[in-house]
Amino acid sequence: MEVFLHHIYEYEKGIRNLILHTISKSYMPLIERKLQSKNIAYHITEIRNGNINVFFGDESCINVIKSINKNSLSDYSLEEDFMLGIMLGYDRKKQCERYLKFKELNKSKAS
Image 1 (cartoon, rainbow, N blue to C red):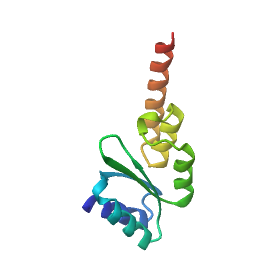
Image 2: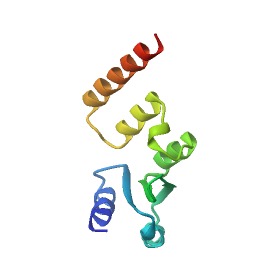
Image 3: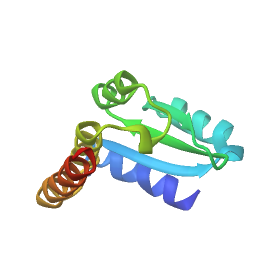
Image 4: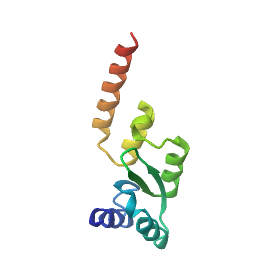
């Protein structure tokens, strides 16, 4: 929970617009109460191992996540994965390199 609270701090200070926090499903009620009490937009998805992915931050970012409408990050298309990385504040150059690498891998699998 300490990391989750630090993520809230980073969001409130404007360091990040979107946060992805993975945690045990048992914490879901506590997490929802905390985000609701701070009026922070969020979207929670259950993942296969019994944990949850908690996306929270700016409402527009959350709406993009909701529009993708996939529970597992492994189900994201290459383009969706790229967008998510950029939205989470990952290094742009590394995201571009990652995208191109996976794009090339997919191209060679299709051949």
